[in-house]
Image 1: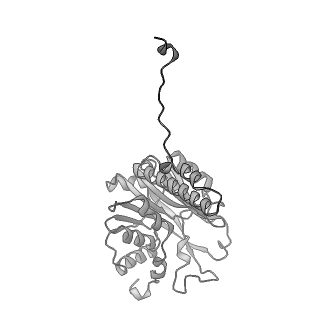
Image 2 (image 1 turned 90 degrees about the vertical axis):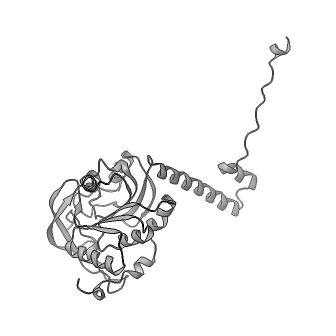
Length: 298
């Protein structure tokens, strides 16, 4: 990419905050120097978000497709990003070269404008499950060889002992990345990834399988946003002190919100509401031990 004027304009996209962008400050309240992995960063859009949100943090931007790598670096320059590092590789369950299936195409409705690159966002280590274009327009006309590493190896080589947040968008290869992170999973505070109810890619692990992996690793599903067959999930590590505190706060805020809505609808009176919210509940009366009859007889 020789000219910044040829780059797709990311500014309208960056202006609309994503769900992780809204939620992360609540989780990492008061902490700024985070370690963040953006796995499958495409053009670096979400890496830019996290660099701006936490400017004292280090963001590792993983992207195996050479054309996208050029876009990542150009966008870092264009948006003056200095706290990100491009990692030109795919993360998988083992190290070595692998075939990468390159996507292309343009949807009938160009909802992000004519400049937006729609076709480069579905490339995957896994081949498409069907020969017909995915969603009617995404095609896979090319395969290339890319270098793969495991997340465990990357952390070992870069002396990373803890990852605060992972944003993962790897188009069906989520299980491969998680299997390559068996040692580091316990040292990750929160994780956002995409899941599917249907195999869009051959060998893709579906939503329930991903949920099993995350639950077995000690993660709690905080919320999810499902579309037709795909969706996103946000997990917090229940063994991490910050995540535990965050989960307690979310539970309390949710309870207070439900009580407020029921009071507003007239279904709940003030006295009942006070008893439902833990820190407003009236403490029990102290018990006074009374002498037994046998004691009174002496």
